[in-house]
Every structure is written in structure tokens, then in C-alpha cells.
Image (cartoon, rainbow, N blue to C red; front, side):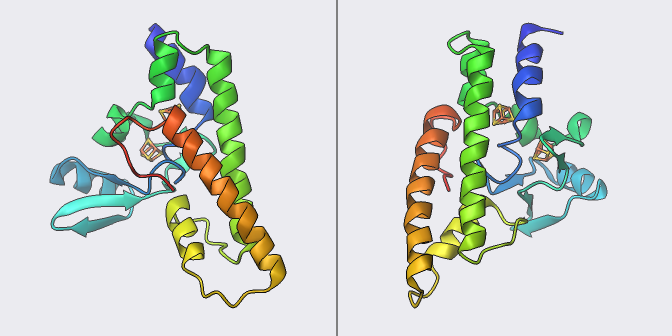
Length: 176
Ligand code: SF4
Ligand code: SF4
């Protein structure tokens, strides 16, 4: 196994943040052929102007591992988050990177828990869309709801900062 493969093995197999709806809302297939192959493998695609995409959380993610790894789409093959790249360049140790992943997973889970408390229980929807939905709810809510909502907003802001700093490629803007 090469050093790069060892880093992927050490980080990605216990992460899944780029598959579980935390970093991204969907994966776009590179070609029509790829879309047909992905669809034949059981992933449910939406087509917009002929371009196929599937929504996250990805149905092929089990715990933190891809169960479609050998045949995963081009976008999945090509994506490397900033944390992975920095670990590869020895700017961050593997232990430190794993700790950042675990802290980020915890933050995302806190937001999911707050979302459930705010009435959004649909875990099949990407985190960013769930956050948007709650922010668009009517304002007639009780005091407890507003208290939870205030905590939720702070947690979302903290997660956005962490994702932007540690995970997104510099050009990406798809933050929850
Ligand atoms: S977010 Fe980064 S470390 Fe996590 S699975 Fe994706 S590429 Fe790997
Ligand atoms: S196919 Fe695999 S790598 Fe791609 S989003 Fe799904 S779980 Fe992640």
C-alpha cells in the first residue's frame, strides 16, 4: 500500500463526511454511461437537463464506509478534502486528522439531534437542506423551540467554520 493509500485508509474509512450529507448535498455523475451504471447498481438518480445525480446521504454508505468503492463514480474517486491533502503532505499528523474528523462528526450529530428537537426528523435529507428547511419554518413557536433554535444557529455556524477550514476544497461553497 502506498503512503497516500495508507492515509486514505486511516482517515476515510472512519470518516464518511463527504458521503453522509454533511459536506455535500448530492453527487453528479460524470457521463450518461456512468449514470446508467450507477443507476443499475441501485442508486436512485435525479436527472436535470440529462445530467444524473444522486442525493446524499448516499445509500451506499454503511457506517463510515463506501459499499460501492470499486465502482464508485468519478466525482467520488476524485474528491479529496483539504484535511486528507494536508495529512498527505505531513502538515497534519494522522492522529490529529482523525481527531478533527471525530470532532466534526460529533458537531454534525449535535446539529442532527437539534434538528430532531426542532421537528425535522428526516435523516434521508442532506444536512444543508434540513437546516434550510428549519430556518424557513413559520415563526409561531414556543419559548423552548426558540431556545433550541438559538443553540442550533450557533452550532451550524461552528460547523460551517470547521468544514470551510478543514474540509472544503478552496473553490467549494456548498456549506450547510
Ligand atoms: S471528508 Fe475527507 S477524510 Fe472524510 S471521507 Fe471524505 S475525503 Fe476522506
Ligand atoms: S458511492 Fe461511495 S464514495 Fe460515492 S458518495 Fe456513495 S458512499 Fe460515498
